[in-house]
Length: 158
Image (cartoon, rainbow, N blue to C red; front, side):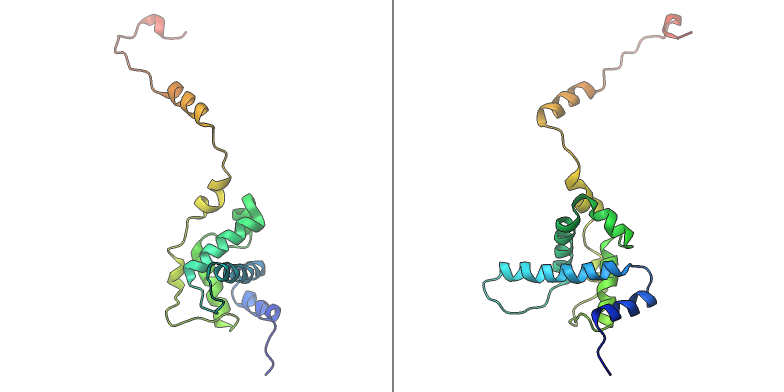
């Protein structure tokens, strides 16, 4: 039996599980390559090692921001990816087809305690006000002291 190419394997996966666009699978594989390269840079020795779910999630975050910037959350959403658990589903679909390997310790649940998409893909791109403007606005927005005086007829608009 001939081994299927990555593209043929993706055809099978998306035919069986339509939740995620094929581009999401390609992206996860690219993000894994990015993660491996990053981990090799951080290590003094050049030995191969297993990438954990948390390490892969961090690599996915970095890769998404590098490739798509402020559009990352939109692009991922178009592919059906809305949270870290979705990345776990994609990874384990690839594992089940033999594209990726896993250890006995690897679980889908490793992807549940990931990050909040809004916090990592949206917040970094929100503009922030300079400190002097924030201080000025804070002073202006402080609630005025309430005065307890009786309402007069002249207070009511006609």
